[in-house]
Length: 79
Image 1 (cartoon, rainbow, N blue to C red):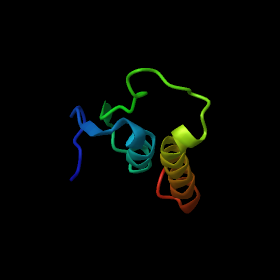
Image 2: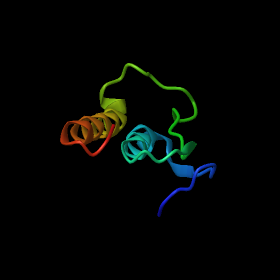
Image 3: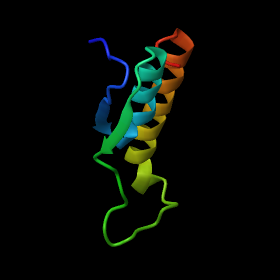
């Protein structure tokens, strides 16, 4: 695909993946408009935000994405 000047491209992906996806688009000099979906929010009913055991899956997910973004930047795959 080769974007033409003046075209508007939407990048649709999960909100958690958007920083890495946009960094790749910038590296390719491909102008994109982010259109995030699938936001992660706290479970209904509240809960203890400081509970490490209750939030381990979220912590793992976030660390995975940020390590991936760092790896992409260090390897030159992302801006």
